[in-house]
Length: 331
Ligand code: 2P0
Image 1 (cartoon, rainbow, N blue to C red):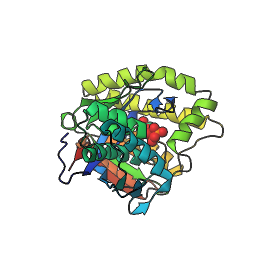
Image 2: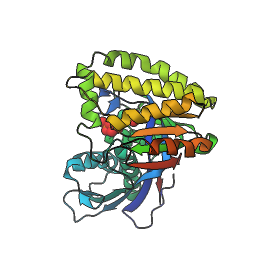
Image 3: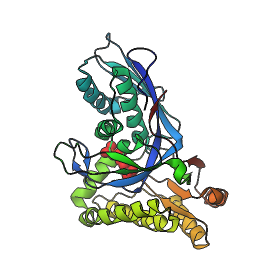
Image 4: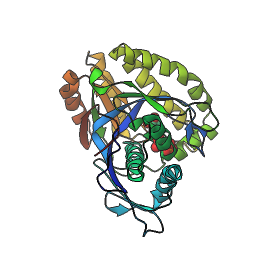
């Protein structure tokens, strides 16, 4: 990561969205935002957030806008994340933060992941901080757990960690995007923001789902299986463990009280369409996050078949496609 910036006190960064193949669901420490479980993700190149941070001594409070609209609901989290960097830089100056996503916000497409990874990268640049990737990952985690992973490209593992200060809770790259160039087809089945955000969904699952303890207990084994599959570029093994892990996360969420059903009918139909393709020998698997979109991961040669199958599912509004991409970068 470069830390050069053209105008003092100003920096702009781009970070790709990521989604997990082995999911983060649950917190060990809500204050430090330390996850209860590790996770493994892929970073995308076609879905990204761009964030500009401009330090302005005339401001008395940070100003945050997303896609051209002031977002008071996220202002506190954004300022808190920037405060971590300001404390380190020993600077109190407030900032104007302008961010945009090139994909739907808050609909289960990991906008907070790319958003906070871009914020930390741009914030550090504006403040003249030369953070290591690990330090960026730790700071991004405190904004949003999944953002710790978007600091890196390709296949990424997030370590839950055990330290009370959260300093061993960070992500690390597992494999470069180019080393196993998988592709992703996202079936968008709804465009509104979800009713229950990830943070409250996780808290509710931990408090009330009888399956939550089993979810946490089984995660290390799933991480080990996925890590080995990625290292061996074993698509079939990764497909099996990713679908299993995704369905376990949703089973834990569905069993919460009140229940958390992030799926709609088209979500379920897409899931079946992907399973049918794989049964017919097409290298593809699905994953679903805290929203109704279905992400189909496939080899480059399978992409057009996957697109055709998902496009024909009633209720699919739009398809987004992406390759795997790089980590967060200043530009
Ligand atoms: C993941 N999700 O691993 C999981 C799977 C959603 C489902 O990480 O509370 O927005 O900000 O740390 O990062 C979404 O959680 O949650 C998420 P916070 P975040 O991708």
